[in-house]
Length: 293
Image 1 (cartoon, one colour):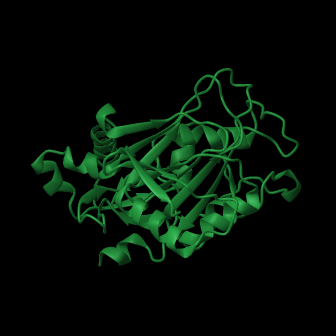
Image 2: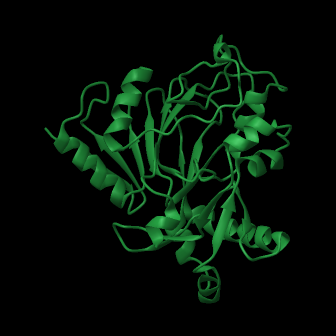
Image 3: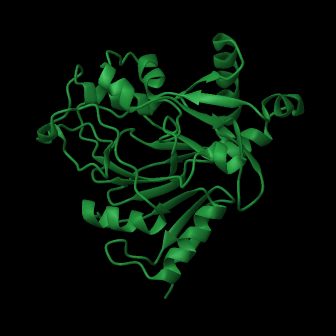
């Protein structure tokens, strides 16, 4: 029996069933999942828990993996390999990170609305986030539909933003949450990226906002004016009717299209509880500005 698609939010969220992600996925099922994410940019898969290798193998059905962004220079202090982002609050020896740890400070940036990898020239296409522990109180992930965000804009705003180009930087989004002190080496390895503010969804032809907490400067605009516009657009795009909140269970995997969604992690209680989340990201085949040309 082939993979099934059950719609949760029409045109936005769907659940995929009858597929075992621990095994090699049949080409027909890969095609069903690809068609589902083309039409519902957030997909939910339910358990069981995957090994890291199984998670990576499933992800590779949808493109080339992006390397995880690292701020920890000592390889012995990395809990996961370079193909997987550690979205947990755990150290290399599986202890909850302390308040001053750079890895914890970095993860606090994930609580702001963002798009994975938009600070890179080859930005994130899909992300696949897998839950290894269950949080009893909080810890959800929220997703916002950027096509719906664009649709909600006044017509004059749509005309204003149609051809704008935005500069994204990982260092901007981290400094906003108080995480600074990056070395010249770190800054040189992650230069700023330029992306269109408006993108077109290939499956539907709908226009979509492409914004993120990493976005900080609109080319040709004074910086305060650009930041003000980006904040305004984020408010439009993240109204409650445009947001899906996923309550995690152990074994859940969510797959989303970064080109047409934003997401954020929510606080969990107590902060000392283990939240073990692991993510792979598929990078885009070409920079978004080239795709739009």
